[in-house]
Length: 462
Image (cartoon, rainbow, N blue to C red):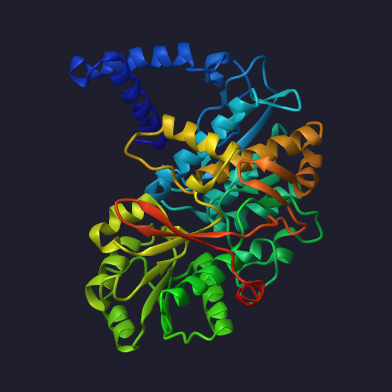
């Protein structure tokens, strides 16, 4: 089942339950009835969200990686915004919620930017074989967006490595890009942690076209170090996914920040996402005398197995704390690692959904009403909504002129938005840097919010 089919099936099932229709009544006829109802009612909206095929409106970009164009406003749009996210694998639920948050913001803006109709197309940067983001797919997607003059901006990516593939292509074409989840320092600022790319290689002599609404990994690494020290850690062992620049960069920020505050790093090693077991690796951790373990990587990179063997060999998380970067802060981690995830800590750069207020809480409440009752609001969903809003604002400020949108995006000043008040700095980073720490149980629950010391942040990203 594809991610679009899964989303339709979930929405249809919820609708059928509301209508009192049961699966045994005949699923084919029931889904057909649900489709007709979804297309005709549109909930509380005056105009139902439909696809381009339904309306004869704008066609989508020319790539099989994208779903059909969506539009729920009046008139016929001539402009298009794109989301580029990992829609398969362990990140699928997270990405589906980010897409839903974008839809909510489009509805709140009557599918307009500056009075001009804007359509939306959700695109996937993973491949079927691995269900992970793929460099070639990221590049081909970006080339499709760059080659279509109707595309005024891209919301994405989630994975920083994919962003590094797309930014130069979109920069050359003058297409704005705003990320709800990229955290790699090197996308916006030079650092000793940069290996495969840095701002000079991404933007060259061109004007910046990229911004993000989340703080970068210098904040995350510094915050995790400060939190680890609060947990009593003096000798953490750092593990990171092999052959992944983002994981390497995150691990480096933690090591740099640890040295700044006087923690001794017991070890610094990679794990192979393709390995069948990690017995030797965790025996090394055990022999090092480490009093905490830190993971930099993704759940998708065999993270469940890594967590399981950490607990089995090194010890439970309440004895030897397990801390992880944001690639693990999703429900899929708990599902993959099961009871071994109990008591682990994981971070996100930014604020927890339940801690948002005003427009942020309104968005979270609407998301809760739309998603399955058993699913918590994923942590980056509100950030996707915020990314959509500042992109629409930039398009309006630029008068719909594609070449003018990047400068308008980089001049963003927000007050009372989904994420509160902040500015986009010249680098493309937000001006505020809270980091939230979560503890795993049946779901991830907020444990603490850390705004790390400026000197520790500077050391982490040096």
